[in-house]
Image 1: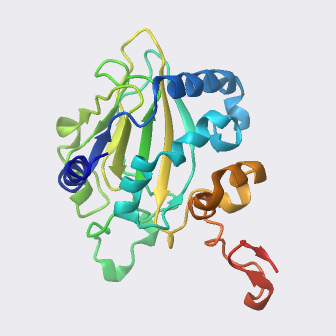
Image 2: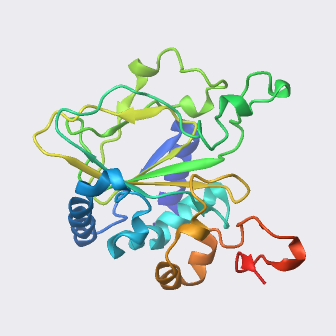
Length: 258
């Protein structure tokens, strides 16, 4: 990604609340992820499609692509944390509606977390979290591409923007692209009107000082963490793991007792 390309994507994020980064994964990498999702899907109810980095090495590549990390860290900082990684296979005839903003469960868009002093306004001045949708299939206006509402990341309150359904547009993207959007941006899957399932991998990212969907420092398999090298220590939040002992007994660098 050139500096000019980065600047264009940054401007899209600021204006629209999302950007589409092309050519993040290769065709071969998409094929490997597609095959892995097919293998894992039958056991979805038992969590097979959660924390995918532990399930198949094809998914480890996603958090190792320099251009994607560079873009994420531009908004969330050098110590941005991976929050989760799960698979999405949208079958023909499924999808549509259900526009929402992320962060309503563990993030900053929780209704219960709005303090009286907030006067009903959510955080829109800074990007607190991003979601990344890796397009393992091409995303088209017919196969269930995620719909995004441009500018809705600046909507000041937690309620749905009045014209969200009218303004929503599909994130049409080539295979191997990543759709990155502000957690505040209203979005949802469109209906898959094609004859084939649509494949994707979702991986949200958070600021270091916020609560993630998973405490990945305890979830990530040791061999996966080892393969991720020094970057993995940051991405999986090893140093962000809160102590469960008194501080003198705790090694913050390893995220474990001394």
